[in-house]
Length: 300
Image: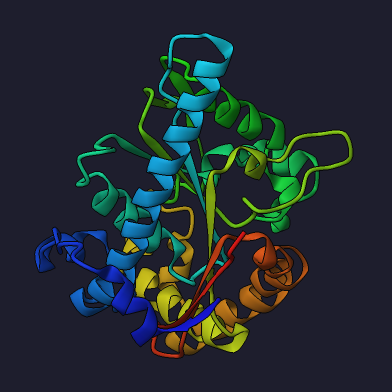
């Protein structure tokens, strides 16, 4: 189903807005102009759909437990969110985590990004793929699949590595713990990638998936603009891996950002990320202003 923003907004029904402007400001990503109108028109209908889907999934689990004669166990609902660098998928993930946790049916919502399963820089450098960070081969796919499988199986605690965007690397010895959430959101570039032959993909464990979409040229513009925002903020931190970029001139930084986009991020998008869009249960299509214009929903 291909729905306009107006058609999609009507599906909100009576879903209440439980988010304030100040809370939204804290959830927004760098240079993401999302406002409460977008939350109302797009994300409230989406949380209503996900709530209904969650309820249906729980009922199916109850049926299976009854059939097997087992005590019913809570099975975490897994939601995957995919899309390009700079398209706004991280904002989508944080926003959905906050909104979904305010439904009484699923108050415990955890969020993990696949950045946590990137190989450490020393491994990437040893393999000669440091310039391919974000490509499928830069992730420890087996560790990610194992993590999601354990969460789905209802393990009491599951640990994931911690990735620092400031240091641009996995933080040695640090972990984040997921403790039997009602919903686990997995956000990342390649979460809809198919598995190699005779293996499982992380999306085999998803109950639902979302792809955040936009034209390549629009994402490129957002990426360059965001790059300048980071150059004037996070990159100035002495601990930042990219602190040398803060010293570039405006023109030098623009050339640098466009080259990185062309040689790495756009290539990854076209070769690996965009081809997985058709695997998503729902596609959020953005316009040049970052606002979502259309929603595509799979019926099956």
